[in-house]
Length: 212
Image (cartoon, rainbow, N blue to C red; front, side, top):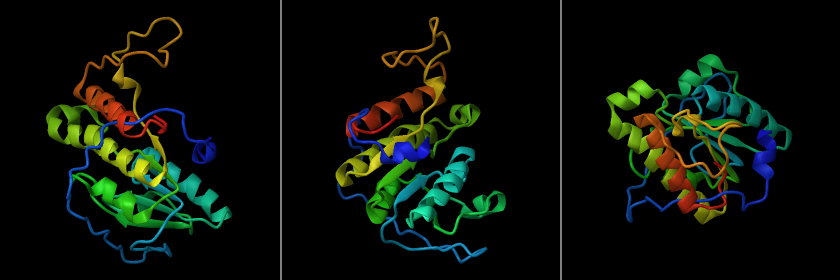
């Protein structure tokens, strides 16, 4: 389960080349006005960091992990471009802080990790619609390939646990009997799948202990 991933020992998987440019600009972490009793914080430390908190998977992670952090008297930070969208579909647990941050600018993801110094990071942010990737390959490359690498580099430097969520579309769908083994080489047929495959490689180059 997700709580087991948070506490698992390091050394399970792997890391990519650090794509963070030297001297990249610092990105301020904006503060949302308090809404519906949710505590909003500027900086400090957090136990769990969810990057891409307003998507389908990210929202479920905020809900489940936020409740788990509340029980252990910890804290969770959820990062997304429009936290208001998350509040429209989810009752945010009291242990959560929401951070409004666009992760598209180069260095933004790494800066968030450095500022909040989480114990565990779940990276679920992505340009996930294949049609959107076909229409904007540059954004697909930034969010699906480069962002994972920079977040992995920041997590490696801090020793934070990283769980990076990819997709089965890194494969073209011609699996042998029994499905794809761990050693299978990606052969994506779409811009989305190829960009996600590059993101996997980037994570494992920068941080071999990450889970992908």
